[in-house]
Structure formats: C-alpha cells, structure tokens
Image 1 (cartoon, rainbow, N blue to C red):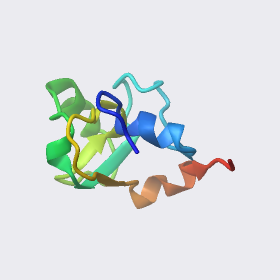
Image 2 (tube, rainbow, N blue to C red):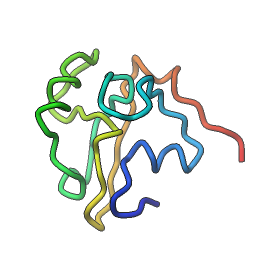
Image 3 (tube, rainbow, N blue to C red):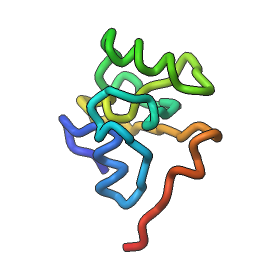
Image 4 (tube, rainbow, N blue to C red):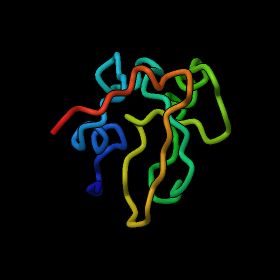
Length: 95
C-alpha cells in the first residue's frame, strides 16, 4: 500500500520488492523502468526530464515510466509491471 507523495519505487522497496535503481532514484538512469498498466491517473505526469531519460530504456512502450518519478497522488489502485528484460534484476527480499 502506498502513501500520497511516495514514488512507486519507494512503495516497492518498502514492501520488499527490490527494483534496480542505479542512480538512487533521482531520474539519472532508466534502470527503474516499469510499465504502468492501471492507475495512471493516480500518479504524477511525466516531466520532460523523465521523458528524456525513459527513452533510453529497452522495451519502451506508451505506458513506460520511471518508477522513481511516479509520485502517488490519488486513491485508486495502481498496477505497474517490470519489463521482461529487467525481471532478473528484481528480487523479493524475504521478510
């Protein structure tokens, strides 16, 4: 469950889902690339910096976003998936 003002990356990490984020979540790489499948209206819109950076990610789609830049602002459910090329970098940490 996310809190308003958190990023999708922060929510994932807090819940034990380790999404690669080489730059530390500051929009300086594209390793935290995800596909926002549902709930795009419940997160911030991509700014120009994110749009420029996400274009570097393999497997780019219309719903591609950087999870570090998707800030929660709505109450609706959000579904984001990690692209197949990056799934080996995602690890669930045992609780």
